[in-house]
Amino acid sequence: MFSLKSEEKKIKITLYTILALFFIICLSTVLLYGDSCLLGSIEKANNDDVKYIRSAWTFMDTGMLTYHDTKEPTVYIMPGITFVLAFFMTIFGKAAGIVAFRVFQVILQTLSLYLLFLIGRRIFNSRVALCACVIDLFFVAEYYAATLILTEVIFKFLLLLLLYLSIFAITERKTHYYILGGFIWGIACLFRPTAAAYPVVILVMWLIKRYQLRDMLKLTAVALVGFTLIMSPWWVRNYNVFDKFIPLTFSSGNPFLQGTYLNYDQTKDYTPYNIGQTAWETNQNEKDTGIYRLKTYGAKQPLHYILWYTLGKSWHFWNYPFYWKEILGVSFTRAGSFHWLVLITAALGTVRLFKKRRESSLPFILLLVIGYFNIIHLPYYTFSRYAFPIMPLVGILSAYWLDNLIKILKGAGYGQLQNTNSR
Image (cartoon, rainbow, N blue to C red):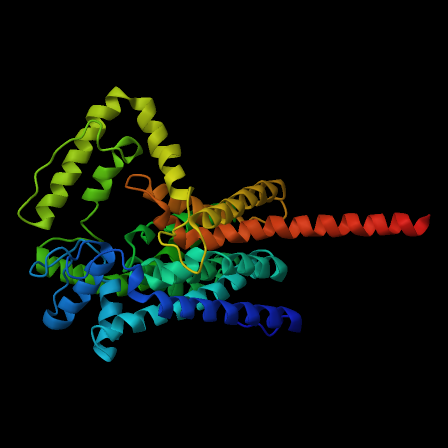
């Protein structure tokens, strides 16, 4: 499943070279830029990354999961990032643990690149897979993400692993793939709750593959066992602390409210809301205000809001790479240009995929995963950070088109050579 034994020697050498080069660049980036890529101030705790760091410190000292307030237990975030940070800080210390966490992310990024090859090979072939790896090698956002103290890198690795297991589960129909997939699905949810509805992708693939209903029910139950074993400690903790069942988080208020403003412009039709005495109350007030805005302004401008909640937010999701600080001498313009080159060629690859749809239905799982994460973020404040984990999959579609282009060009060159020789 993860082996390269059947690969040609030149494929192995090329892949190992790409992986080694990626690891060296990524590690150098992390060591070179370090805390200069922090999004907020550790003293002020004014952004996600520094709040995660403070959450880990508080968890180490008190055993309490916190986020906004160090004295108030939270269900605002999933606990995965806090646990991982606290693990490295316990071993290396509160400051050195942050460095160790970044190095850990470098390792995960390299393993993700290997998974990208495996996914591309399984869906298409080794040439397409290598091409996708080369594309990812030149994607500067991959190196930038490794410097950050966020969930993106870990979640991307888990998503790629989950997708790879899904491919085997769907094609080989073996129970143990679904059991393992359930575990990875649960772990992914501990970092990003947006993974919770991932089985929708599997359901669509089951329908495409014409699974029988009894098999669907059996395999769903099997996957839920692994998922429940991973998530149940979180559910028990939430019930004990908040006296209610909270399956994921209770924290969509602010991004939901921000998402109700057309083009995120809060200077027009701004709606004030009350700051509660706790983060819980504030979150509920933000949700209520967002619902009020949709009922009020959405009713006045239905077409504008329909376009905003489909095309508008999708544009913000895709229009720029997750690259907020220039590193390694790569300008924002160059990063954006490469990003769009990948998107355009991926779109061309998608068109070709539909033309060749009778050959195999398996590649459509890429489109389903990409579409799922686009759609799942539309109700909220949507931007390029959330597209980062699925960009490698976009790269596979780009590589699929480029591989076909190369074959066409080679074929044209061979034809010209034959014509020349026949004269």
